[in-house]
Length: 434
Image (cartoon, rainbow, N blue to C red; front, side, top):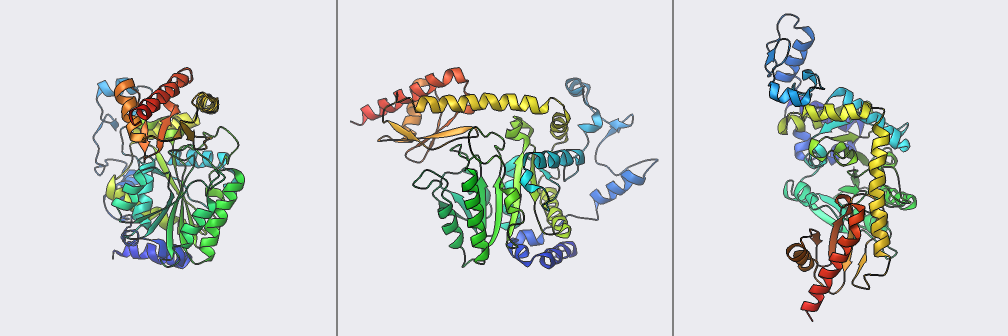
């Protein structure tokens, strides 16, 4: 094993042996090179006052070389803020700005020990870093039965982890914290579990209430006290889009110092929060009991980044940073969130109107981009195909009964026609099987 990796492992094991036990074989082996091109280039950047012949970019006239046809479309930005490589951890100013935003929006993390967010190539990349660092073949990844299908690829297919599902909702149509607790305690024999908490939930658009959040935290604490090392990951992709009474904070703050056997990891980003999906700017943030632990986890994270994408795109980081620094940012973001809330409320108004009879019910939703219908007596994919082929309407079928509808991309004025059309397709399919 590389001495740098061994040094990081020694630090982690000294600071918290439970966290060391959580690391995968890759997580233990990975490190960020302190000698080599990057470190020598950084040293030269600070000291090479005459010529710097280390960096792998081209320069001209003291600035990064660039094509005029590209710069003409980006003329508001200094070439040094878009053409150079961003550091593997991300643009330092962006990391600081995101950390400040995170604290402002999540007061529960005040006073907790957590690291500086590391920039990822959006949220999937952050989740894959978690998988690489902590998931070995057979390790349990605990998620609800209503989940984003990419978890299976990221944790299951890529790393060979075992996907353990529990029902998202209980009999009262609230978050099934008892099911989560049972799934975690079932891992006592393995002694380790990765739990992914995705709120607002994709595909249902559900965020638990404050009391439900306390129950989730208690379930994870119970598992830790029973001897299970828990990597608690908050997938906060749709954070901030809360339309009704629910938690309005990430659970990361409450998990940050919950128990020595709990490692809290926050995955979030600008992609959905700031409506810049194609920019691919996300973040991964660790909470830990010591600065030494945080530094070691960050170094291993940078090792994964260096070995996969080297560093994230610089232009989009600059764009997001400028937005965060703008005095108009909060007002513009609130305006768009208001539009989304209006669409969600309109959907609920239509579904509660009685106009669709008993052809379907719907899962509770109060946030995010989506909602899910639970169809009665007809197959969801058959309805999906009917909608697409006969009515030119696209939806997502999930299993036999569930149809996901993204109200995020439908104007409020068109929602009535959308659900009327879905209802027609359901009736068509029902009539065909009689």
